[in-house]
Length: 464
Ligand SMILES: Cc1cc2nc3c(=O)[nH]c(=O)nc-3n(C[C@H](O)[C@H](O)[C@H](O)COP(=O)(O)OP(=O)(O)OC[C@H]3O[C@@H](n4cnc5c(N)ncnc54)[C@H](O)[C@@H]3O)c2cc1C
Image (cartoon, rainbow, N blue to C red; front, side):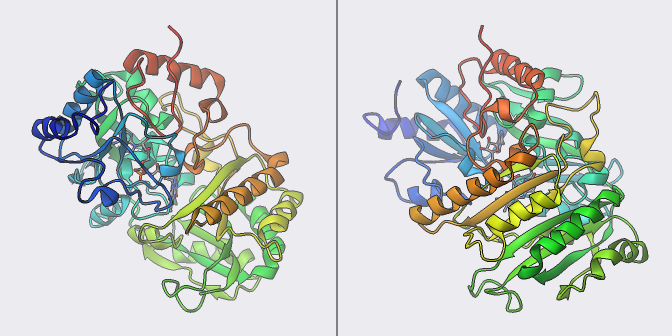
């Protein structure tokens, strides 16, 4: 093994730097701390080198370079999911943030995004044609990382997980090949990446379907925190009858008293219901009526361009130090609501700024033969709790409390968690049904038997 930051530091960087158009930063060099930083500022990432790739050819060169030196390679577009990586030993970090090519084909209703493209870039460009992509709640999450983990967004109950809308991926495999995987070419690889994460190669571009959703009826109902149990119970009854055109979330929120937070909610706590409805204002208002009759303190529902759904969840618009974790629930009974409110609601002293329950079901629950490794979720709700982690002590407190929430809701847990809502390294067996995990292991063994790629929630190769 030849670590590139010791004896051959200069030569190693020089060699790698000469092989690519992109930029290499080594430990100790100018810009190192910025280069190794993730969107989640609480992540202390210390790889052997950071490479800012410009192209698929750059990525292939790094993979070849690493393979012959016994190094490993991991990839990030943004570092939103840094908490789910299990370390950087002997690992080169390839950042795809410079690979920002984006093409929208309005007639075919498809997009092709290079690996560094963020969802907000897609939804704004697609929105100009009255089209929508299956983005999640956060505008600056990477399209590739999100989609490879499933991808649960505001249109999910009507149009499914983002992974189901993938038409093709271009990726670099462990042997340095640049391949295109779709239904007909490299079908096993195509199956595995759609839900199996980044264990199988470095995706350099992804093609996916867009949908003719120009506007939605969407917004938030804010209720006093003290009404947490009442409102969550009303919401969980309400979701039982909602059509698949509605995707919603019930949420406990404690806004910190910082200037970045808008004045009406700054320093206050609420129980909120967020929802997006694909349909008219009139029908949406009628659907929402039972929740409105509860008398929210604030009500932001209105017809909005689908591209503005990126603001609905109030996710931070810039990198933040955070910690959190999630789980999936099979059901949300009044007892489950009580258990949640006891650990995260009024008087709980919870350090979690947000604990959300995303409504699943509808198309998210439908299994289709053509789907990839994760095409549907066998759960009723996906839960995620998150808090600020300005230092290690805060991070530890948030992690402990996120686990407390999970423990409290364990009696209602679904059989498996949701990849993208599990922000620490997970054993694949807790994310996939046994047959799916076995098939993922077989694809890993076929494409990356030596585990060159290090990824969030890694898939281990099947034994030879
Ligand atoms: C504020 C916030 C809101 C979120 N909202 C949602 C949501 O609404 N729905 C949802 O489903 N998820 C959501 N997530 C989870 C999010 O989808 C994951 O964190 C996702 O992995 C982020 O992708 P990224 O590329 O931005 O992150 P990164 O940390 O850069 O990448 C995450 C992982 O993806 C893999 N990866 C990234 N790029 C590549 C590539 N080019 N080739 C191969 N593998 C790659 C790697 O394994 C990497 O470790 C949210 C996360 C945050 C922090």
